[in-house]
Length: 120
Image (cartoon, rainbow, N blue to C red; front, side, top):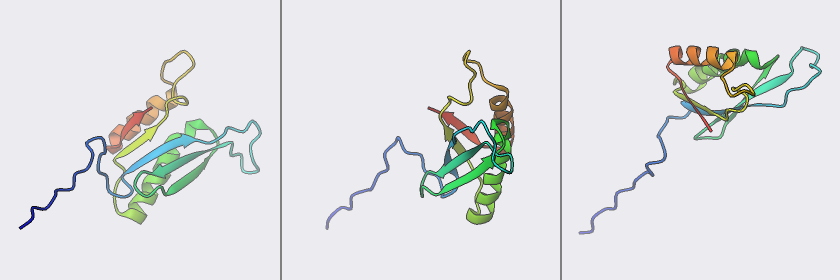
């Protein structure tokens, strides 16, 4: 009789269901808006499937609105809630190194919704 080898998952990887964990970044910010007054976008990438979800935004202040659109999509299509969002931190911090108002408001809303956030 041969003993089965146990498959292990590297400890550096967290296990999330499809739709629970996303990466985020802002798109390019255009000085001139398009015909509907959008100047940028929020691009979300699901960590397991690499599925992309893009939300047009009038400015960076509408980040929470973009996250809410993603939350609705994930609940409807995946049947789960978002648990975690990862982002780079360049757009969330002022040039003096302190958090900007959008970041602060977003963190409060995300905490209330039970969504964790990490930065690189």
